[in-house]
Image (tube, rainbow, N blue to C red; front, side):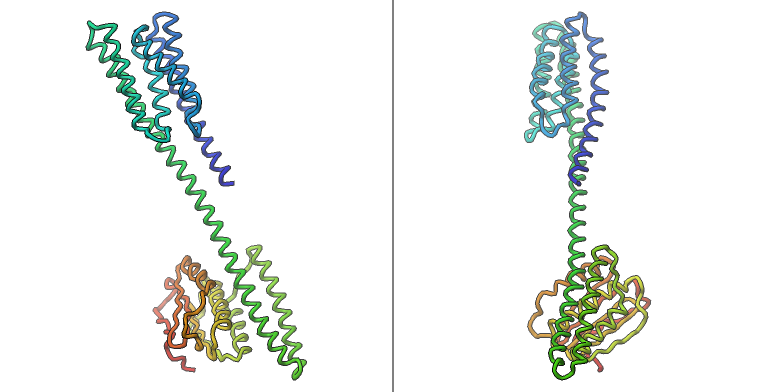
Length: 383
């Protein structure tokens, strides 16, 4: 779709360029023929140069130099030569100056050299007028050398500037296309991260509850059945959340995630303490809920925790647990994705491991009414 949009933009720009060039080339060329031609066959010769310039103007915005370039250059070169030596038409350079200046900037390489060659050709051919009128050197040089070469320089310079503008528009379209593709990739990463949050968290909880039900199936059948019912309810809730995610309707609630985390930690035999220093700002409620959910999953999967402390403030959350491994933890891709998302929303996600403790903290400084220091992973839990 982006390629079609880009092609449409290029086509609209091409039409604008063609319309502008033809609107300028046709009347100016007609006027020059009318002024310079003294007989009908003079008009025919000069008219061939103008016609070649019109054909070139209508084709110059093609993706590559079209096949008409060489024929138009040959025709206009011959017209200029005939104007100098036969017709006595000092405006016969009009065709070659238009055609050459149109296609020199489009060459894949040696553009400047081609432009210099064009100007040199116009000047050298104009100098041949001295062979026909050797007595009037100043007038011949001015009318057939200086003016044609000067006009060709100006027209060629303008065409080079136009080509630069055209290239910039093309680069802008490519940049917009790349940005759109990058936005799609980011959205896919976000979707994959949310799906990982839902499925990974649920599967780990289901694993814990099934293991607990296996232990209780012979000693407490009623409790085992209750655990299995919770597993079924959890799976159903996960299906619902997955559908909401697919239709962009999912929104986490920190209070729900907090209660869920407490239940999971307690079911795993982990003591949990929650400190509420202030009510969490609603603008970051969902993001902090994601941080808590991801951290809960990581603690259950990667740590041998016995105690967890969760601290809530107006602008953030911090979770500290013991039982962290001394060796570096495996790559926590979920937290890495969350760190980028929190940063995009003006916050900061901190992850710190020290002395057997692990700290995960998300803070949004712009929402804080007072500066609250974050606890260190090495700080005592006071539990």
